[in-house]
Length: 234
Image (cartoon, rainbow, N blue to C red; front, side):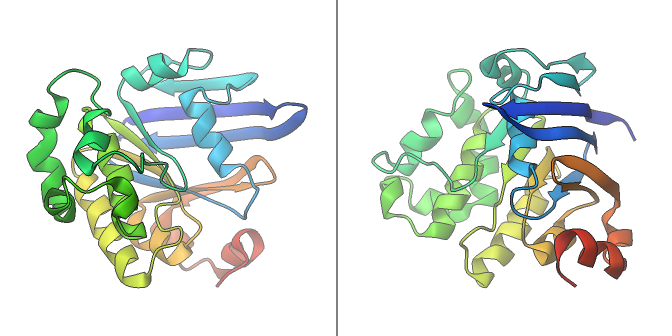
């Protein structure tokens, strides 16, 4: 299987702090790959480094055959990478429709993608004129993901999609991400191992700023020693 994204031995500083000290991730095209690890391990910084928000000082990031490290974030995004940040970050005073509209990369993107978006997130069609701040936490998360679908992205970076959601909403989010992965490759950060194990085809574990293990999720599920050592869960 061809890889749409290859992150090789990246090192990233935030100020004087050496956050990533050698992270490598391979994301096969058409897959869902998850970054796992304890809080503060460097998972979110890895996503931001890919998008150029915290540019790596060393290492390479190759997307669709092109090295993209060192490029401006807007140029990286324009190549077909969508980003769903943690804590949703929607515009609370704008309507659902306006939140989606401003995510257009080209005029008419929303019109072209509306049927696809509302098939995955039917609640948003019903709430289209409601301000984002009036949505429930789960609906806001759906809107955050939907915004990344407005442009025709070939890779989605999704940070902690289950954070703060009730179990029944997490189940809906799992189903939604499965649906969108039929059309778009996904790299996500997820602290909820149960959700990650139900979603991902592959995994990479990050520990103290280094990638320490990667492979098939179906094999990790039965590897209790690795789960205890790096994730603190069974």
